[in-house]
Length: 421
Ligand code: AMP
Ligand code: MG
Figure 1: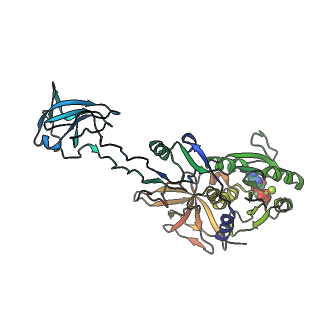
Figure 2 (figure 1 turned 30 degrees about the horizontal axis):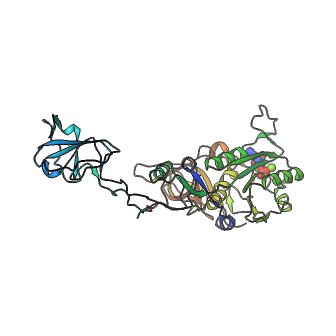
C-alpha cells in the first residue's frame, strides 16, 4: 500500500502535457489557455464619459454655472469641437471627452435653456464638480501591453468578454484529453432496465464518470459495460485505448472475478499504482501504455463512492495537468467541522460533507451520514469530501480539517492572483 501523496505523485509524473490548439472565441470558455494575453490598446482607449450629460471644464462650474452648448457627442464619434471657457458639449455614456473638457456632469443635475445648460438644476444639490468627475481616464483600467490573462488559467465567461475586448478572436488553448469509460461486472444492467433481477444492479459509475468529465468540458465516449470475463474485458479495454484517458470501474478488488489488473497487463499497460492507503478506494489502480505520449488508465473501484473519490483525488488533477493548468494539485481549503468524524487507521479518509459559508465568512462542513463506499445516495448530497489524515482516531466538532472540493463547493478563490500586477 502506498500513500495518497505518493500515488498522486506517480500519476502527475506520467500525465503527458497535451499539445496546444487554436480555437475561436465561441469555443474558448472552459478551455485552458496556453498563451498569455495582452492588451492591444489602452482601456478605455480614450477619456470616456461615464454618464449621459455634458462634458465641461470643472473650473467653470465653481458654485454653479451657465454654459453654452457647442457640440453633441454620441458614443462612437470623436468630438469635432475643442471646448473653450464657458462652453459645454452634450455627451453620451461611453463617448470620448472633447479636448478642453476635464469632467462630465449628469443630465439629471442640469436644466437645458435653449443653447445653454444650467448646473445645478433648481432644487438639486449635487457634489462639487472636480476634474475627472464622471470620467474614466484613458488607460485607467488597463494600459496597452499589460498582461491580462496567463497561460495555465481556465477561460471563464468574463474572460471570453475580455478576449473579445482586446480583439483576441483566435486563442491558443490546450487540446482536451479524450476520455473513454466503461464499467465491469456481471451484475450490472443498463439504467433503463425497468426491473433488474434481485441480484442485479443498474450501472451508476460509467454515467457518473462520464457526467463528471463532461462537466469538466471533456469529450467522452461511453463504452457501456464489460462482463466479468477476461476476453470480453480485453476487447473492451482495446477499444478504450484509442482515447487519451481510459476509466474502468469495478473488477480491481481481491474477488474471484476481478480480472482488470491481469487484463490490463496483458494489453501492455504498466501498472504504477495498485493499492493506496485511502478510504474509500483502496483497490484503485493506475497504469500507462507504452505509447508516446502514453494513454493513462485509471482502474476505479466498483463501489460508486470509491469511484467518485478516487476520480476526484487522482484523476481530476491528471486531467488538469494534461491541459497545462498552472497548479494541477487540487486546492485543499480548511473547513470547520460541525460534527465529529472518525479516521480509518493507516488510511487517509475522505468523508462526504456539505460545506457552507458561515456568517463570519469561514467554511463549515456538516458530515453526511453514510453507509460507506456503496452509499451513492449520501455522496450525491455532498459538495466536499472532508479529509481525515492517516492514523487519526477522531476529530472533534469545531476543529478545522482540509477538504477536497466537489462540484457545488463554495468558491474559495485559492491560488488566485492578478496578472496585471
Ligand atoms: P467490484 O469493485 O467489482 O468488486 O465492485 C464493488 C461493489 O461495487 C459491488 O457491490 C458492485 O456490485 C458495485 N459496483 C460495481 N460496479 C458498479 C457500477 N458500475 N455501478 C454501481 N455499482 C457498481
Ligand atoms: Mg465486480
